[in-house]
Length: 593
Image: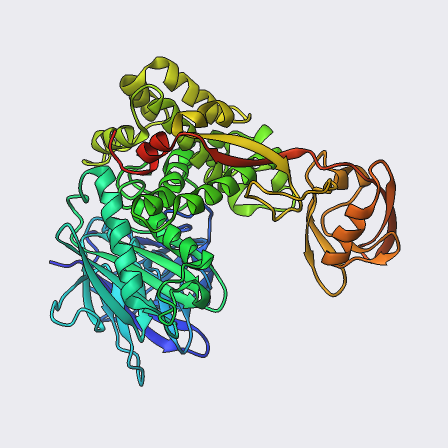
């Protein structure tokens, strides 16, 4: 018998309001505590979803009941031990995959940001009724179980086994395009809302290839996976994804989609979208089932700390593009170019020598997810450097006749199915058992030390070597061919505007740092010439090595003059060279050990 029932209604599109009703019968005489999660699994920052909740009231057959707010996200409800009803409103205008959004085109509903938890009934079965919006011919896409299997996209009644499953299953409402494909007997759904036109058949076919490749690595789909949904929210601007138990919610732009009029075109934007889909689907095994034991269960009232995000997010980031090249959706050259960008984003940032990926994982709540202009100097990404640790480990294992593929399969079988979770040292020990103590100790050092990775020494085991050249500008992150001229160093990143060049970050030790440039400065002139993006680089590269140029900047409305030395850019940009095609083929050609 269902003990907890929710109903979601589109209340006011213009005001972006969702109406929520909650029905349940208290199981004891004590007052009932109700709370809304502070964060959503997979996105490690406190979101305070309850700030969007208002007008909460409760009733039973006798009338209104007393609600006392305990803190920013919790309420205490006095009751008469009979069936009761709560009603409240949620403001839905979060343009992200983590909350709720509503306009006249679609609705994105994350139950974690909508549905109050009833303490004491967390494990009870749940129903969710999605009321059909008035005057709107909207459909519903979600991984929740439908009461009616004959009308899979209709509004109506849905089921979840418990509250945790409910809040891990987003819903997308709107006029949808739907494609269905099969992976090992399990139906997979591709649903899109907000788009104009696309090559749906190509997108579906490419996704199927990715999914088949990912399941090959783990040997099979998770045994409890009976359906999977790719929920694609197409916007004018925005990008990202969030993994869920049997679905993923993806935000993308119109430019990211494949063009039906150009069936042979493979744009960088579409490649990035496929990489995002690959990343989130990999999480079906690696995060949604195999996960830190500290997340069993999730405790969503406050932060839950783990130093393992380098393993779960970083290794996923390694396998997302690797799956694309393995199933033929990226060429070897495209894969190497993407890998070069990852390498250089890590190596060119001073933060690699400041923070370890274990520390970055633990402090994701306040550092990685709340980056400021100093992040380049202080915050290493457990995504990007974690993926390079996976690359180094794969190379080291293959030099010893083993592979990361085989180790991942062992890890999945050890604590992914059944779901037992991993401790801080469990993966290191598993690596030791599989490949030996020395390799495990190398891995431990890469994870816990703030230092460079031995890519130059290890990549030849994968059939490639590294070269270096000058970086021409901050967006130059890949390719072996640089300028034939001596490039001048600068280091700072900026964004161009009509006012000038706004400095966004200044790496410590860079020429810009030596000149005294600061983040938020507006660079308006170099050697008395207006600073546009084109003029700046021309003036810089035409200045003799050893000379000094004059910079004029606005700093908080003050005009400041600075002197910047002209130095030759060091050869710090890494590129890859193929030296052993057979090793490369073994590495990126299959998932076999």
